[in-house]
Length: 331
Image 1 (cartoon, rainbow, N blue to C red):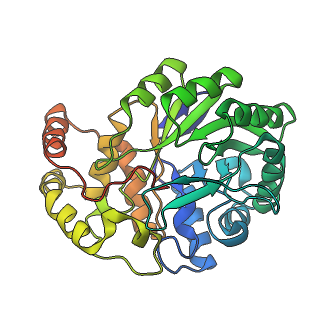
Image 2: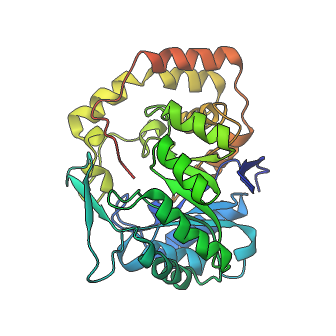
């Protein structure tokens, strides 16, 4: 078991590196079976990961939440379970659409307060638990004030169905408004070597004492240095960065990071995660993997210290490149 330092998302103590469970459902990163998914999640917990992140929108019919519920049976108290809502729109409810940079062009959510309790109750059933530790609207609803959605989650906190409110993919202004309606403990945002976090969002989170959960901290696997193509059954086929030509260009642009990792005797994944952990004491990345050795590699990054000279060299590389095909919303 890896001894992982503890960080705080607001009031919530968690391992400095968590586990993003999206990869455990088919159609996200190619084919996977439930046995392999359960084994991966249990191994992450065995190795010290205490934050597990999922969503009711990962996999068909709540598959990801259900898998996590089964995998954590008998050890639920060992982890902080975070899940997200808004994509599984009830029959007859409006689909509030907004454009994204995916190949399919748009997403649809509904985060109206009248539906939030139903979302939570379904997630509780899927997860096989009595309480959700950290509950996020997956995306802000373009037709619902974020403070209204936050207030609806606050009612669930008061009723004991949810412990803490989180936000995902929001602006600094939305974070501030939601936090005024009900205290926010964590804000989830894409943040990695190839996607800087919004500096205004980070500054607001620091001001309010809100932790940052970094999704896609390995650039959807790109920063591992092992991705040269993606299959049609892989969600990344919808991301412009993973178009064959863009991916080749990106691999060339970021190749200098490999030399730094090799010199340090660590993997490129560990360099990417350690670099991110050095950016703020309250950021917690949530890489996902199905391979036990990769899971161990990712979690051990929490124990890797980077010298100021190394951080400077990395920043010099990153300052000279920009990911080709970068889009605004990719979660």
